Image 1 (spheres, helix red, strand yellow):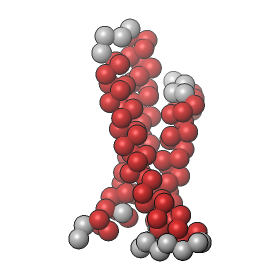
Image 2 (cartoon, rainbow, N blue to C red; image 1 turned 60 degrees about the vertical axis):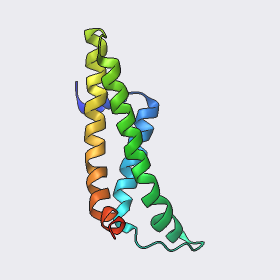
Image 3 (cartoon, helix red, strand yellow; image 1 turned 90 degrees about the horizontal axis):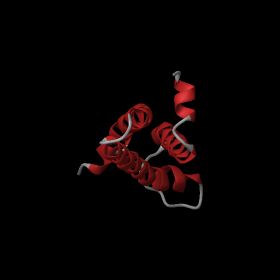
Length: 109
């Protein structure tokens, strides 16, 4: 199964989560110190750094639920859940790296 067909088979909500998480991770380098003005700085410096960890937590919850559902299921369902887990890992890793590089240093006093 190639990557695109695997990604299509995981479902619309998971696809949306992946798109939003990846786009948030790609936009993180443009964020900076909090500046709560009525411009795009509010999005890049306030909203985006707050939302990316939430996306990572949501992916983590879905990974946990996929692992729970894998136990005792049929082989076909386990293969589908394994494909979902692989997609989650491939999406979460670059987003986590971007978070650690650009946001986590600002959280350390």
